Length: 116
Picture: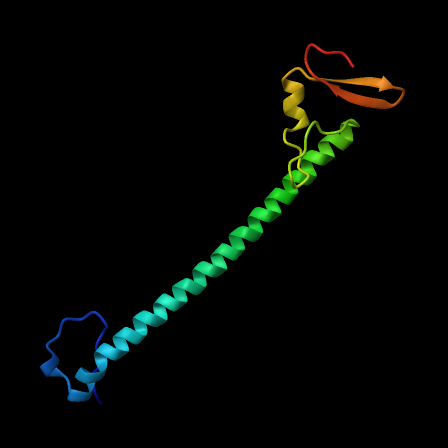
């Protein structure tokens, strides 16, 4: 039975038979290529997972911000291209914005120093 060598060993080639000496570089190259292909596949799956997770987080944030405005009965001050409010209602209220009734049952956000 012929002895097998690790890919990175430093043994003298004369210790192995001619077949082993001739085919070792090709097998080493094939193994390196296989590992590179496997790494690319893992990177592609990882990128797809990250994109999916990011989309899920963004969608959850959008829904949460819209629910915050809906619960207060007011419209968001601005929406980005995805329909996500550009600022949370909680932040506006901390910045002294107020919610005032403009008509019976109709509420509006009012900037500091302004009246509805």
